[in-house]
Structure formats: structure tokens, C-alpha cells
Image 1 (cartoon, helix red, strand yellow):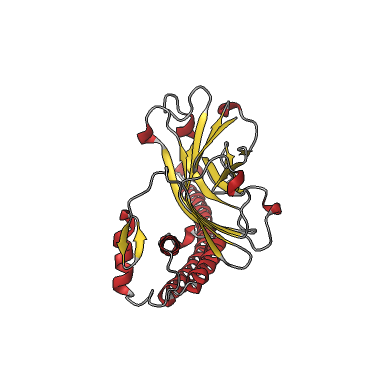
Image 2 (cartoon, rainbow, N blue to C red):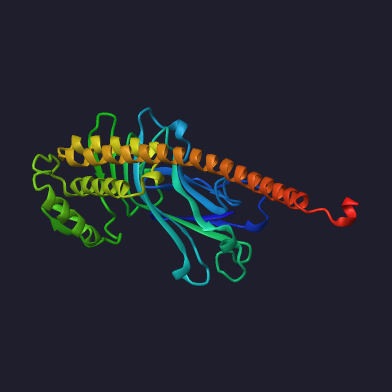
Length: 326
């Protein structure tokens, strides 16, 4: 296996993919934003589906201090080596901690599509995977100090030390800078403008007591908030208990900065209730389906019994002939 680390991207080249004998494989560790990571893949699919599963995982978590947490917005891409338009990309945001070391996708691409001849995903026995981490927030200490990193990462990072003091790692002057737009004092990306405007329209006072003045910190709080909203917009059955626990932690973190999120707390409680309703409803559905299968089996047995009885009745309900009587 080969790997390449560039800025906030890491490329993993898996050789001899079709002949791998392992149920799961790991990339080499890599560093992005001063944090160590590795990728985890299930080349034969997992027990739930026949698709390639892929996850971003915190590396060497045992070496991290008690109470560490990381928030990351990242993407995982299965590269199509014939045309980039067909590359399979998934985006996600997640809080990582000791209970939740990894996050990703159980179904990145169906295995038949991945192995299909001339499809472009498996070329010369190689599969290429790219992970990109766009925003990273670290609570605790970085795995690798900025001084020891070979290159400055063009990645926005916020680091909270053990005393919850906040410091910023400025972007490299030579790094590409995305255009930002001011919305009520928050610098946001063009793709975020309408969402942020909508939040202020519906909750005009939610940032009236917001304490941080640093524009980078303000942008990060808003990014976390938008990530929370995006999480709550997922199907309840797709959210894990860890997802909802991390959402609760994130709400508390953002509220500590002075944002009023009582409206979001209500929606979070609503999503939790919906998830519970979905889980109990699915359990009832499963029991009902099992009962229906039993009833269907009984119907089949009764139908077979009726057919046999009809045949017996038809056979018995035949008059005797004169010859039979005499």
C-alpha cells in the first residue's frame, strides 16, 4: 500500500485490492492539522451490506490526554481513475472522542460497481482513496506540534488547552484563501450565507450575548452550529446514539460561547424522540412481520388442507354404478 500526504489531504493507494485476504485494512498513520489519523476500510464489505465501508479514525488514541475531543468536517472520496466526475465522495462532520474514535460511511460504493471491469475505480489492481479535512477543532493537546510538522497546513484549527484558553493557528500566507462574506458580524462561506441569514431572521437575538470577538473563532462557532443543524436534518434512523450525544455536547460548547440555542435544544429533543419512536416502531413492525409470516404459513397449510379435503370429498362423492351394486 502507498500513501501521500499533502496539506489537508491524504491519499491512500491500496494495491492488489482484488486479492486482499483481510476483512479490514488500515492505512498508514498521517497528520493533518497537528492531529494523527488513519483510514479504516472493509474491502469485502461489512456484515450489513455488500459495499466498501470506509472510516476516518483517530490514531493512537491511548496517548491522548483525558477529556480530549476533536470536531472535524471531512470528506472521503473513492477516486475514479478514468474520469473524476464519477468519483464517489461523501462528506461528514463529527465530534471524535474516546467513545467515538471513528466516523465515515458503511456504503461508500457497492462492491460490484467497484470491481466492475473498465469502471475506473479498480485500475491495475489499485484503488485510490482521498481524505480531506477542511475544518478542525481540537480540545486538548495536538498530537504533533506545529514546529515539528514539515509543512504548514492550510487548515483552520482551533486549539483549546487544558484551561480552555483558545488560540489560533493562522493560515499560511501562501495557502489558498476561500472568499468569505460578512453576515451580522460572522465571516461565512458563500455556500453558508443563506443558511446563516435564515438563522438570524428566525432567531434575531440568538447571538446578542456572543462573547468571542476574533473573527476566526466566530466563524468556527457558526460552522459548528451549521454542522449541528445539518446533523439534525438527517433521517432519525441514520443517527446513532453517539451522534446525538455528540450533538448535545456540541450544543453545550456553542452555548458556552454565548449563543442562545434554546430553539435548537428543542429540535434536538424532538429528533431524539423521533429516533426513539422510529426504533420502537421498527421493533413493532418486525414483530408484526413475524406474526404475518406465521399467519401466511398457516394460510398455506390451511389451503393445502382444503385442497386435500376437496380431493377426498370429490373422490368419495361418486355414485356407485349398477355393476358396483350388483
